[in-house]
Image 1 (cartoon, rainbow, N blue to C red):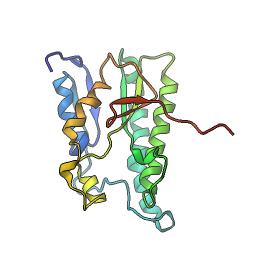
Image 2 (tube, one colour):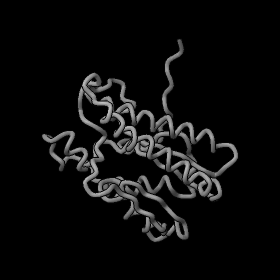
Image 3 (spheres, rainbow, N blue to C red):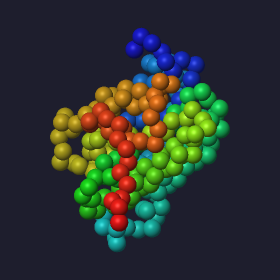
Length: 204
């Protein structure tokens, strides 16, 4: 990348010790950004909970998934709302998942799908709250099946060589962080390279 459209800008990246977060934390400086990289403590279990029927889910397991996938994002918004609004090009990108909005829900993926659905709602809410009076843009990203440790744990029989790498996805996510990005409150789908409007329920 010859141009540095994020020069003199600061980016906060969570989950930066591995997977998509790590790839994005490496890619952002290429666009000129100064990166504050955040990651879990050694030994923390970051996968979106066990694959189990909802009726078998332990309350502590549920609380852990909600804390990682939902509450952590809320705390980031609370902490970063002021600098985002003060910036001339504040950008927020949160990771969604096809599990949150596919037509046919998969059994046993409830904790992950439910919390990713909550992330989608958080994106839409914060976008609505910042759309009129600020330059802030808020997007969700559905990266699709990616060659990560979480994917390996969830799909141990899958051939990882058939999956997209985090490094291939990272430039697409960085594009949503640029001052030139104009969409907000929508979903960027990596596999189709398209911006999608979240679908509401059918009319009663």
